[in-house]
Image 1: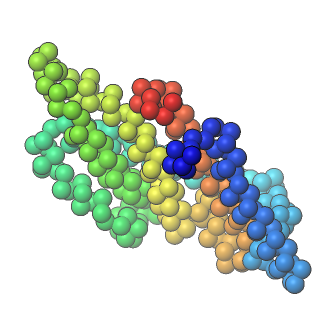
Image 2: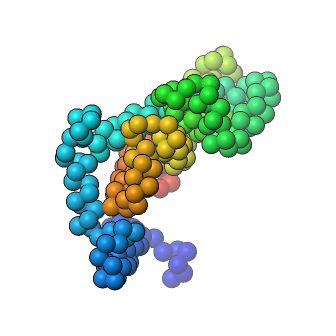
Length: 271
C-alpha cells in the first residue's frame, strides 16, 4: 500500500506524534548531561533538577516586594492580555469580515485598506502604539489586535465572498433583506471558519504579546523571560517557554473541540 493511502487511527496518531517530542527530550537530556559532566556549573543547558529548583521558588514562594506567586501572576497577566486581544480581534473579524464579504460596494471601498493594514509588520507599529497609548495595558492589547485582526478579517471576507451565489439568490427570492442574508445565510457558514482563523492567529498573538511584555511591562510571561535572560537563567527561561507552548496547545485543542461540537456539519469530511 502506498503511503499516500495509509490512514492512521487516533491511537496511532498520538503515538507517532509523541515520538519526535520524546526524541527531542532525550537529545536535550543527553547534551545537558554531557555539558554538566564537563562543567557542573554550566547554565546553558540546565538539568531537570536545576529547572525544578528554580521554578519551585517562582511557583510556591511569594515575591518579597509584591507578595504574589510570581509564576501564577505572570501567567494570569499574560492570559488576560491575550484573552482581551483575541476577543476584540475575533469580534472585529466577524463583523467586518461579514460586511466586506457580503456587500461588494463596501468591499470595493474598504478592502484595499484592510489589505494594506494586514501587510504592515505589527512590530514596526510598537513604538507608535507606546507613544500614542502609553506603556499601560492598552498598548499591549492594541498590538495583539492590530497584529491579528486584519488577517482574520481578510480570511472571513474571502470565505463569505466565496459562498455559492445560488444561496444568496434563493434567500432574496424568499424576500430576505441584506441584513437577513448576513445573519441567516452568511453568519452560520462563517462561524466554523472563524474558529479556524482564531486557531491560526494564536501563534502570532503570542508573539505580539511576548514582544510587548518584553519592552514595557512589570509582570507577564514575556517580561519574566527577558528579565532573567541577562543572568543566563535558562533554568527559568526553558520552563517558561515550555509553559507558553503548553498553553498554546491547550487553546488550539479547545478551539478544535468547540468547533466540532458546535458545528459538526462543518467537519463531516474528517469523520
